[in-house]
Image 1 (tube, protein in one colour):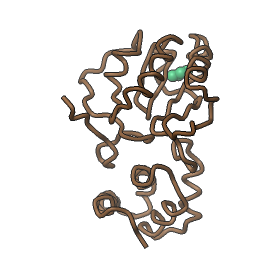
Image 2 (image 1 turned 90 degrees about the vertical axis):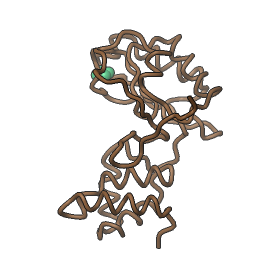
Image 3 (image 1 turned 135 degrees about the horizontal axis):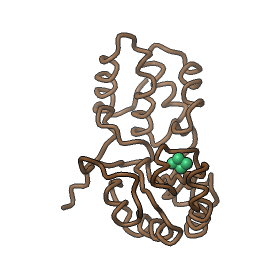
Image 4 (image 1 turned 135 degrees about the vertical axis):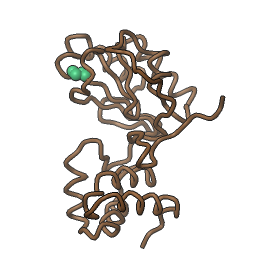
Length: 207
Ligand code: FES
């Protein structure tokens, strides 16, 4: 039934081979499906089910439990603003409103061009760098409303092929919880996390 690319199908087979039980590969395969189709279409759910000898309902039950699996189209850049307690106390509501205003988009919506989706999310586990924003799950810490507006304009105008946490932290971030020991050269190429083993990671090769 598949019309996935051969490269994606091969990646799926490699991921499945890592597990003693096929069905254990459901979560990485859902990310792979999002990379292939942009979001979890009915076809993507059926394809994952077929690859894992599951029913579409079983795959759907996993996909619908976790918010990072998107069952509706999302923009090329998914902007997630943490509004849990630490970030809220450090001004995340103002950051979210600045993003909504600059993007002309309420949280939970995607623009007509399919470029931006804005959402607010629960704690991202980076409370020490609050307030925190992610673009395609790449983290930026210590974001101010002004920098948040710059971030939206940058995404619109530069439309980077890859978003990378270190680059965005440099451009739009503030106080960081701690420095990474190793710089992150890879980044995300779509509205799903950049995981090297899943093949959903990218590199900006312009320089
Ligand atoms: S409360 Fe925002 S990262 Fe924890």
